Structure formats: structure tokens, C-alpha cells
Image 1 (cartoon, rainbow, N blue to C red):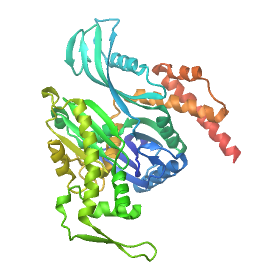
Image 2: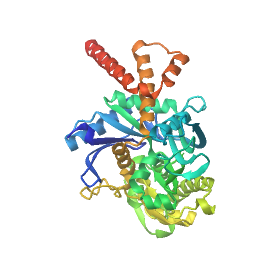
Image 3: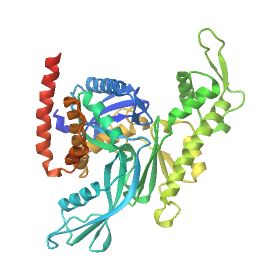
Image 4: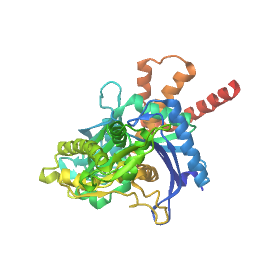
Length: 452
């Protein structure tokens, strides 16, 4: 099988790192051919805080996926999340030189690239520029302007922003693990691709992806992404609370949460007790399931309240912004018992659990259709689709990586203006730049081999 036919999604999470290999079958569905999973040790709340451990975890997951599929992985699409992610709305326009020619994809690229030049806060970088609605010569609410005539092309954009250092650290880990980074995708967008149907996106839906370290939110209406947010709480804080509240070790707390945990305290009777073995010959501990679910309930309510606040900020009360399809829960945290009922109770919105089997071929095993793998499946799908807005991210990453790697090789600090020359380079030079980078990579590899 050719490398071009397959796509690899790498989900670098707080609790686990998943490498998933997929391809499209003859019916246009995604077929998962290999999956690898490792415990994530160097990531905290979606942000890399230990490069060495993260590299080892990535390599372990990749090796497992390669063994599972019998394929060699060279290129991956990576998901990015973390509390440093924020989103903003922005409008921009271009005046076309020749209004007698129809609008083509080049015009939209020019408009998107213009948004990429927005001045951000120090240390921030634009990750995604997502066009929402276009205007052509003042005519509003155009979803697809390609093929139309017009002199002034205008658009509203949803711009996703993140910290340069966090993005570059992830790029560094992937490169050091011996892989090529083809694109970076916001994790809630990837999850949304995997678990939401087009009808739900049209009707209006809020996707809540409860991970280990963060809870991601993506709101869609009229088939367009309207709002994204990353909340720095996830399943890990629930485990932490159980650990503190019951005075047990983390491993036991995690098992308790998975096996007996419930988000609804009324479900458990007072006489339901679970016994936890004591450490090193100490007496076993007895914990009532009612107390356990009270601890879980308190923290889950806090997480849902934070997410609901973001949904209110979007303005879901307004008639035009109403989310008819309600809420879809996915991610590892969505497997918590009675969570669906609790979310419905707090928000008053219809809720369902999202499984990433919407676009998967029927012969995939039940493991890959678990909400835990929603982001990984979404990353594979994004990579297979190779959307129009991907090439900007590729340019961004190759530029950042080149700057960083040159620092390593020459072992001196680069001037800021030198970095800017990389940033301002037009996208048309991408092919040439990549070939230069490839040559340099070969030289650097030879240098390392000789050094050994």
C-alpha cells in the first residue's frame, strides 16, 4: 500500500497518546488499518511539559500502530488542544484586480492569507483561519463564492489562536520521534468531524469532548463552526478528587471511577460498599458508592457549568443561534455513567453520546468506535480529506521547524528580524523551501551518524 493512500492521526493527549492509521475504502468510508496506544507521561492539560517522555510515548504508540498494520509510518497529522487555545471572530476583505473574471480558490487563499497576517499578542500564533460566510459586492450570506462574479470579496472568519512555544514543542517531539509533521488540527474540530452528522451541524449542535486533561467545545450552526473553546479541566481532576476524598492512590481512584463511578448520586444506595486493598499489609478501606458518586458529581457539575457558560457566551438563547440538535458528548470522560442525564438536567438541552462510527467502514472493530478514539479518528479523516486550508498550516510548521532546527545546528540565538523573514515568505515558495529543508535534513543526519 502506498504512503499516499493512508493517513496517520496522532492524538497527543494528557492521559494517552494514540496513533491511528486509516485509508478510504471503495465506498468512501474510512477504514482503520492500525492503531497504537501508549500512556502519555510528558503532557499536562494538553501541553507538553516533558519533551523526552513525550517522544518516548509517541515512539511507543507509532511502533504499536506499525506492528498492528504492517505499514511504515513517516508522516502524521497532529491534534492540538490545551488551555492556551483561544478563538476570535474577524472580518476581512480583498478588492479583486479583475472583477470580470469569476472568483476562484486562489482569491479565497489570498483572503485567508491576509487574515494570517493579523497582529497577535506576543508569543501567539494563528492555528486555523476558518471562513464562515462570504459577501460578494455587498451580497451577504454566501456559503460558496467560487464561480461568482464580483469586485469585492469579504468574509467573516473564525480564527483559532495558540501559543507558538506549545505548537513548536509538539512539532519538536514529533520530529525527534523520527516523523514528518504534515499538519496541525485543533482537536475539537477533529472530534466534531468524527462524531457529528451534517444534519446536526446544520441544525445547531455543541460538541463537548471530555478528555483527560482538558474539555474541548465546538459549536456548529448552519453547517459552520461558530465557537471553539478549551476548558482546562478533564477526567484527571475527577480522579484527583477521588484520590484526595477517599485517601487512596491514583491507580485505585482511576479504577474506582471507571468501574463504579456515577455522575448521579441518587442512583446508589447507602449500603453499597466497595473494599479497596490497603497498602503493604494495611487494613483495606471501605468506601460507600454514594460518597464516591457525590465526589464525582461535584466535579462533573463544575466542568459542565464551565462548558455551559461558553455555550451561553456564544448566545444560544437567541432564536437565530438556537442549537436544535442540543449537545453531543464524546471523549474518554463521556463514558461516565449517568453523565448524559446530568448534562440534560443542568443545561435543559437534548444530549447524546457521540461515537466515531458515523464515517467509519462497517468492518472496523468495536474498540475504534469508542468515544475515547473520537479525536484520533477525526485526525485521520481530516488528513484523508486534505482540506483547502491545510496548506497554510503546513507552511507555518515547516517555517517554525526550520528556524528551530537551525538554532540547534548552529548553536546560537537567531535575531528576531531573521525569524520575521521566514514568516513573511510567500506561500508560493513552499515547494522550494521544502526541498532545501530535505537537503539540510540529510546533511544533519549524516552529521549525527558520523558523530556516533
